Image 1: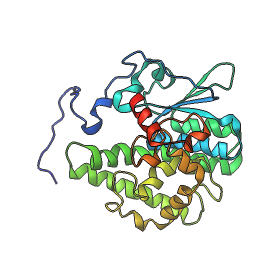
Image 2: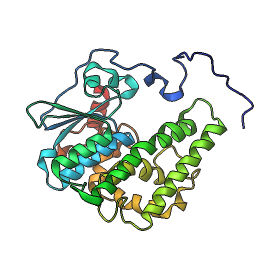
Image 3: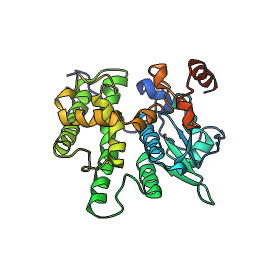
Image 4: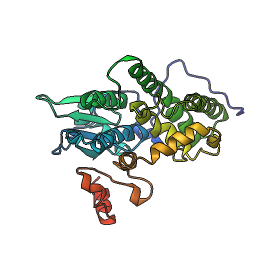
Length: 293
């Protein structure tokens, strides 16, 4: 345990240099920092995002809907570079006043409808197309239970464990221990639930799985924070079984590629404007997208 003790000041003030790798995108105020128009494509849904776990939820959902034959779920996915502050542009903030990705414009009605917060997007799309969320009754409640579990739990994994273990400018034992303990507790919650259920909310694949997998599924598959060994994820056998089954779904494979700007080139599709983009992806196209992003 560190011998250094921090004494909070009487009034906290913002030091812009603090915050580690993501210091440039965090600030104690909201609102736009600059004027910037967002592009608009030809499809009913305009998504402005990045392939973080929260962004992956929505692209997986849209790809799953298209895989089930819902052509009305066609979408344009525009890259939002959070490292460059795109999320603080005026048009983006008008869709999501919280300045976080993803942000969605639903253009299917007479008036464009903004949808922000990934969980809200999943419910909106599920209800609109009648998929992955039971219409009523105990089954619907169970799906919603787990959807809200994810929304409340993931900040402990991402902003808590992930930040202090992988991104903080200094490695401090107390916060790493605190959030590692909580992350393992959450994995145990999921492991116990999945011991008797094929999917999170029962025998049917739902938006609960689509919400939880990008965080906890990818964690146990070794894709988040390089922490699989540290957290002994292999011991959560039921979570691992579930994570691998969902990972094998073609729509999930496509969804996790969209707006992805990191990893092996074959796993990246910086922007998605047509289903054929997955087949026509080449290194030249990737380099062009990188130069324009």
